[in-house]
Amino acid sequence: MIADIKTYACGVVIVVLLTITGMTKWQLHSVETEYKEYKDSINDQLSKAKIEKARIEAEQKSKYDREIADYAADVDRLNRILNGLQKSGAMSRETSVRVAGSSPDSLPRKAEDTDRTLKDFATTARVGCTAFYSEAMRDVLQCSRLIQFVSK
Image 1 (cartoon, rainbow, N blue to C red):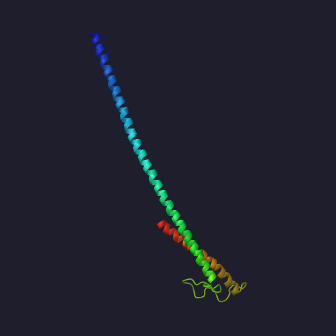
Image 2: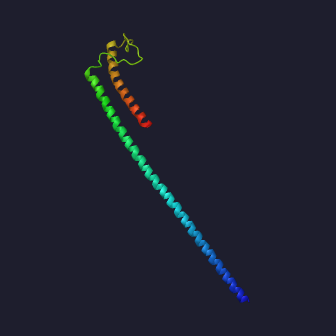
Image 3: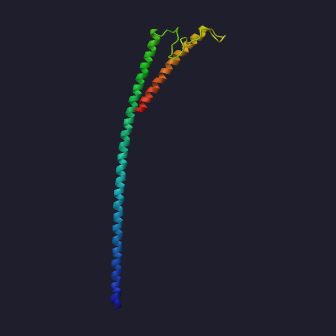
């Protein structure tokens, strides 16, 4: 009888060990399957994100290149216009450029600085104004192109 109990006990222990081993293997397989699905999902999302990033970068690069080309064309056109104005005599070098909101006389009639004459002052102002207005027009062009680029 004790021999039968030992046999049954050993049988029970073997069945329990086999059951535990089977359950462990099943849980391990379940965890591996779940991990593989999770890893595949992450890799899929990562590849989609890389494709989207490449698409966005290509869009931005083409937009940037187009804007640079447009800006260069505008600067070239502005330079041609300014050179044409200076060469054509449409803007006399003897008179100053009127600015909206300024007084009718952009230069004072008499020099307030006793060291310089009115003629010297007017010549300096015209030369300075030409460069100033040219640079101001370039700055306005650059700002307007930048605003257009950002607002698109």
